[in-house]
Length: 543
Image (cartoon, rainbow, N blue to C red; front, side, top):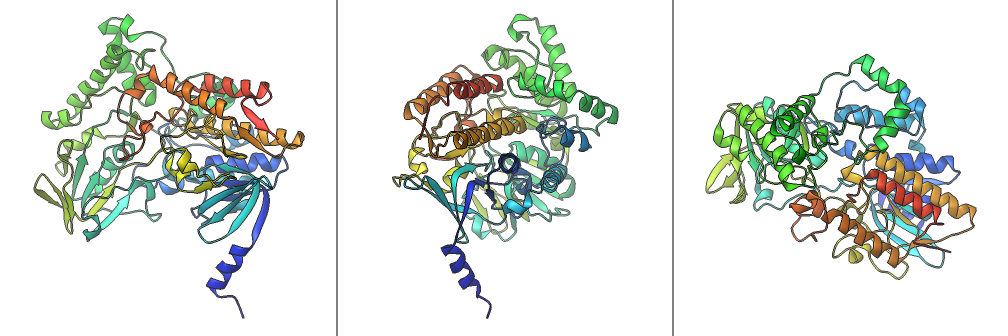
């Protein structure tokens, strides 16, 4: 007689599969980690909470979702064959195209056979006697491995606010970070979008075209630069492909790991006419390279204000209603929050079926069964979209009960903010590696090169351990403390650390206010990682 489901779960919970390395997450980081370690001869399993590869691009399927890094740079570079065979169709790739790319990579390198889908890890415990990690999934499956690598992404844990009355709402509620795979048609519906961050800025123009009426609830306006998206010119695409080695090398030498024209002039050192010419050229080109207009925009408050005022002037040009234009105009430092990239965002507020609701001074009172109440006024809606972003950088790791050999929890270690060495490891947690976690450049860079650099460093380290006959590696507390101090010191000299953003956890009530990514730049970070290796893995205890 076949086992019942209960018997099957019970049977799995008593069996433990054995591997050299267990990887958590099958996004771009987890896929490359699997490929690289398999090439080095290690046995690897990847545990993925979703039902397919892609990570961020598996979950974020909201209308208008696309990358804000140009597609010719948002791809793997570890294989020239892979670079040459894949053709991006647009300047900025859409979510469906990026997900197709992820699946192409998974098929090309036969990755699926070592990935377990629908396997959400809930616990991970280190055993000092065996120097191994045991991971347990929600379904009760267990695996043990000498090394554990987290590849869960920086923006993978959705921030789901608890608005009063939300459970009473009789319509559909969606979160941009967990969009239904089949999509949503808002045709003829009254829709309320809560939030005006990056996801909302991409989704709002698309939803406005479908909805009978769209209400946008804005607490804080954000700066956004037009993408100027277009189909890729085949000749331009092939020219980049022919020059990929130089193209990629140039990118690695930039602060953000992105190949764009960086102007080495100071905004404070040129006249008003020159500043305006440069800003106009950047606005016309579009995208995040706007912040490369001058070299002091993130270091000199007066220079930054010239860029901020330029964007505000564009908002006033585009938005017909002066009162709405003012509500949409940010007055904080440009670049201290994530700079957004859009297609027709500001112009959307000229549509007669779009209403901007200001909740900056008086927040949403309650969600009613039929809509949203703000300042005593009821807005009836058929669907609510929570574009409220993510509990960034720490929540994914904290969602798993990581315990070291003494039974201490990672969440306890991070109670007052995340502490890592290089954003790769933590003191007190041996044989545990993290990809693009707090203390690394991660979200301040092009994520794909950052991922590859981390994966290659971790893979080389594990190979070194094997070749040296070592079983255990752990960051020293002194090295971790020194790195945390350095990360904090570098952040202090940059305007990015001056406002309430998700970089410091300000979007999550009660979260410690710590500037989490490393802001010293991609080249400086790479040099530090290489210096550690040259020093025989300086800052680590190996045994």
